[in-house]
Amino acid sequence: MIELRHLTVGYGEKAVLSDISQTLSAGQMVCLLGANGVGKSTILRTLSGFLPPLSGEVLLDGRDLTSLSLSQRSKSISVVLTERVEVPYMKVVDLVGMGRSPYTGFFGTLSREDKSIVTEAIEMVGISCLAQRTIDTLSDGERQKALLAKALAQQTPVIFLDEPTAFLDFHAKVSTLRLMLRLAHETNKTIFLSTHDVEMAIQLSDVLWVVQDGQIASGTPSLLTKNGTLHRFLEAEGISYDAEERTLKIK
Image 1 (cartoon, rainbow, N blue to C red):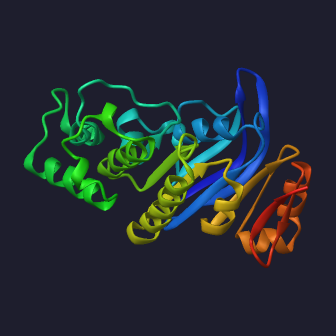
Image 2 (image 1 turned 135 degrees about the vertical axis):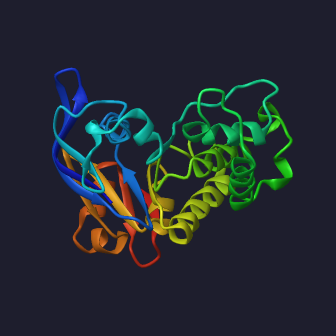
Image 3 (image 1 turned 180 degrees about the horizontal axis):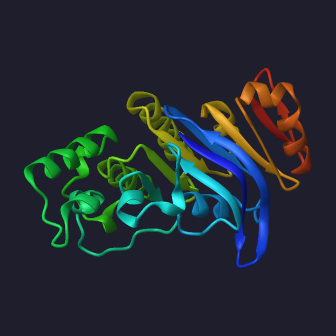
């Protein structure tokens, strides 16, 4: 479990979001929603250990994240960022194999067990047929699944993803989110991602974090619908939400 205790995040001395107290539990996919510039990426980078908290704490199973070494963090949290991977001639199996780097030592040689873990990760995301393809020949959806397989090969209890559906077409977005939801439930991992795909997040996530007016409201999509949080968030964007049909309409 990850616990945020009175966390303030930002850059330098500038706070973006203050006094955040939330939890992320195992076996759930949690989607982070918010307009551009509200601090979604800042939250993810702070929880990943890339940015230090301005104040407050991030606890990973009761341990302060800032007290963990890089090796300890890399065995606890895997991160998939928005940037496209552009590595000529690298095969999918080799990219996924990079997820084993926290365990392989200085030379990075994969053992038989490491190779078995890589194969299993590739199978879990359904891209076994692409294992020997090079990254530059993949579609955006296939590439995203390869990156998710790399995160799975890292064997961390927590996976963070920043806008994982940003470059995908509609069908690939649905497929990717459904895959992550299934993996959270089947592997008991904590999967936390930021997204602008509001309708899909409402329909597919276990829990939503909604950033608005400097605050984070969290809960199941049903709860946030009942208490009006989703209505207020979407109304600010000029969108209405039909709770019964779980669909969005532009005003």
